[in-house]
Length: 150
Image (tube, rainbow, N blue to C red; front, side):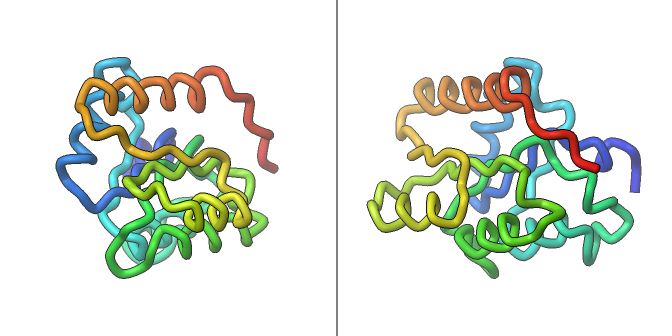
């Protein structure tokens, strides 16, 4: 596996190709998509995060700076991905931002109970969606100070 996959800044977990493309386009426009990996389901996300399956050559401790996570995913749902990330001492400090169409109070409450760092409902309008994604990238990649993992 090449070095670009080892130095991931953003892991985008999104099964909808249109939403993923809009997200990546907004990040590219703001020069924040050079080290982005897009996975299309929860099982692939877990393989990437925990360096298993197709990603077994990765170092699990070299995780992304932020995970943008949809809730409605095939194979393994977003809540289960969040639960596993936050339950493992190797990954629990990776910021996870839920970026979903769900505005359900129970989804919001459960996400925070599991340790999500931010919960954002996807705006329907393209310009608003692009602005939210750009602001997310700016904050988590440039403003936020994560702990140094040992």
